[in-house]
Length: 496
Ligand SMILES: [Zn+2]
Image: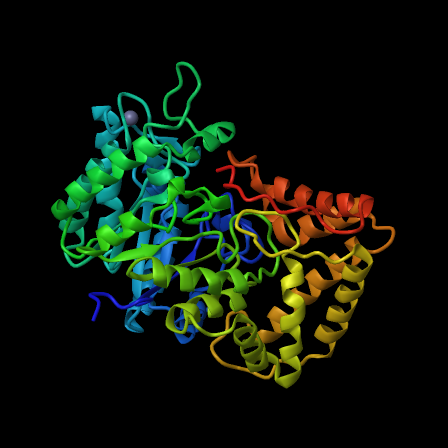
């Protein structure tokens, strides 16, 4: 009997960070801007994920909160009040609640403090201590290296990240004596520490154009850092878990493109001899870019089975930045940990039947067609000629229009609201694949429906929403120019 059975900790991670705001995500950071959820809606989401089989709800205390302003301003207090209510509800339902935070990245401008600068480190310690003291019911404290974040100033390396995480684990022990620690290896590994480039004379400012430098894989650096982690792990509190994918690359692949250099499986196996290991694959369910009804179930199940073979993984995350649109992904992600040998098509069909009755099963054939955007973690291949794609979207629209929601189980949103959002996307994709699309109108339609909250915000340090909107429209523009098939999705990390 392994110490921690496969898939035991199933974590539902809602990333509501300030660069990922959209109509399907709760706005937890700008109370005056709308898209707010009431506590009852949050509790319904928790109930749904619990019914799906998740054991843990996870959130990121993102840098806009993880700073003095976040502690003191009204938006921070509003956040805290609601998050504590959600946490209390989840804990009352026997779910764990995990708070993750970057070790040292603070403030709305994503400034990374240097642990080797005594004044900056004192600030980081203050923030960890203050925030953990305000979140008394959190049961797992996750410490991650970035992104965004990472320091290469003043001699900082991946080892600095590990050593300083140990100090933060001590703070967590004092503030939340019962909480477990989860240490994240994110990146190649330990995202950017000792590696990320900055401009001449810069300090810890965030530079979107330099984030890619934090993803470079250096075998010697990785070896040294992982060896150091193994040496230091016994010093961490008992039950500390380590989040480590099968590969030290954005897709968590053991041998991306046949290159086994960044294979992390042996390290995972070694850590698992003493500590719980988990995966943290963001791109498996949706990634952080294009917002659409994601359906990556084939990849999800293939990955789950590979994880089961690779090392004694005892769970992992289901990432979402669109909780109001990603029910199918969430359901399948939780279930794939429990029954990894299920067929993804069967899982989709039975889920959709639960929402819309027998007729709903037919949706399962169409939903993968939404995965047409070349994007981080998208291994689906939509290879229809454009005219056929257009025809399929028309069929999908007809099907969706004929369905009636039959389930009233703990869903958030209700199945009828979910159906309406699928209709929005089917219509959009039908129109953008029509013989003479009006690209400007389509761009505006998508932006207005999904991202209009950004019309009322100053430009964010991360330009993702505008890039994702342009990318979607440009894809179809290129497809129209060459109608045989869409562009081949490039694998690649997010820009930040
Ligand atoms: Zn530093």
